[in-house]
Image (cartoon, rainbow, N blue to C red; front, side, top):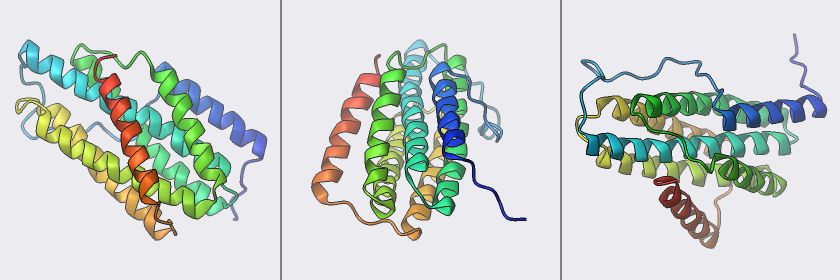
Length: 214
């Protein structure tokens, strides 16, 4: 049986639902949270716990933005197959969102206070990318995921050695982001011009620096 695509109104309502669940912390993972080999409840010093909390808060913000970007791009495209690809990737990003939120609670930390702002800004960027056409939208996605992958690799270097639980989550996220980038590339992504890539890196730097503390 052919799949019936939702109406524009249904898609809009679904987009609003995702936004509310994301900023309210009501998202739930479909996959189990990754666990470190040999257990994940090692005692951390106060300094290590604070560092892990700050880094996982930044990662959580990244997943808030990912929800907004994918939602906006899925809403913008007229290609049903591409929309389903965006929605499938967004469901995996929902896992990341729930995992990082859970880890923040375990570390005694909190999400960024600016999450509604991060979501709104990322959603606007996703709409702009989507309106530029599917090839440009996919190219934006490839560049975003590659930057996130490098960012997560940096966090694997910075996380305290004893925080195996956070490391397991970040490593799985890194693998998923690399796969999302490759899927977008093979779907017909167009490479972004260098100035746009530089602007994206600058914006990401502002976001991660702010979210580390706020």
